[in-house]
Image 1 (cartoon, helix red, strand yellow):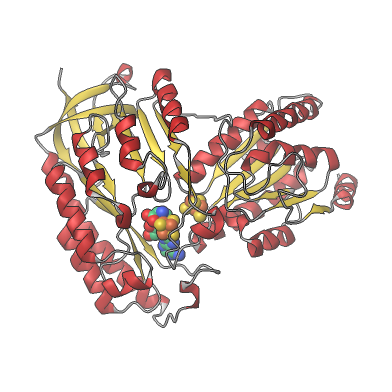
Image 2 (image 1 turned 90 degrees about the horizontal axis):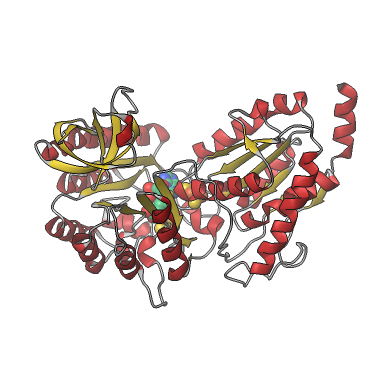
Length: 497
Ligand code: SAH
Ligand code: SF4
Ligand code: F3S
């Protein structure tokens, strides 16, 4: 064993660091390309076959363990990586111990997300020692940051492959490089970004499917690392999105989640903007739901709200991250709206869609925030009465503008503020869903209950979890449910025959 290990370590060397897509990788059509060319995809299919030939020699079906640590966009990327793995002949293991390949897709949005990855990659050391042939790959937003990729490479010499967010589609080529040359590869080219159409996708859910409609972000909120690690905003062509959604509905999917960091700026400058795209996607036959994430308040228009209100299939749920209730802080955050504009949007949405579910994101402890600013956030929460709120303590992200700002409030104080905010939202959220009690809601049944196996669980048009009694045949179907009880996070009801 020791001998194998020695041999293994000696063979390790770094092939290329910060490989540039243009110059080093074969067949690239360059960084300026917005859409990955058919030729490039053909080339990747060639590498898929080469990897297949290599893993065939294992003498058993190669198994991969993959995990996504990030947002829905990250999960969606992982579905593509899994799709490529499947085409390379891999099956999927339920733990790293039983895998020939481990692939972690990482998130950089807050420090604790990164710490979790460092911890879990650290824990792979033993698995790799037991199985030196195992390939360990780490990809995604976190390692797109050069200082993190460097740290990952130095701290974990047993990680074979590190690649960023802009070379996802080159995974087969990179993996083949590892199998063929036996070294290590770090590939994190900077890029304004590409749009890769036509990659295989492995979806494990048969009822819900995510469809990215745009990538990247141009907003540069001063606290946020996403624009840095995901590149500039770029939208997929409307035709491609519409064809994909049509295909998914034909396959029997019932809920389509459209993804983007700021879906409201989809298609800017092209013929089809977001409200128009929604109109198109609302026009198919049959019963289905279209939902989307995330809306930036600065680009959220009355037109968008009107489209939702007048639609047959668009979810009555608006996740509208406010971040802060203080105009001074919103300015420092570079959010490009003030509380007056935000509240006007909320009022308009409620007037046009009375049953709408409203949710938000809030950051506590942004640099320079005072207790007075926090009080304004609490007041805004009382005024809007969100159905639920995702709340975060500010996390300093290297390379962002906020990281350079004075941040005098102690962590302890921020912790106190955070608890106060949770308490206020807890009180508001406690009874928020009570307004649905007695109503009949149309519910898409998705599976067995999360908290109670005896119940089925589903989602209403407002994107609220609804638990109900019923048999398994209802899964994947829409049913009318009379709501009998409201919990802070879900509704309970009974089906109407
Ligand atoms: N594009 C989405 C948000 C993506 S990140 C939008 O703008 O709505 C999800 C949430 O994480 C953000 O809304 C914000 O509340 C939070 N977040 C982002 N960066 C953060 C940071 N540095 N510290 C704490 N929370 C952060
Ligand atoms: Fe980050 Fe702001 Fe872009 Fe959202 S809109 S991803 S918070 S920079
Ligand atoms: Fe998503 Fe995290 Fe990247 S929130 S876009 S996986 S930094």
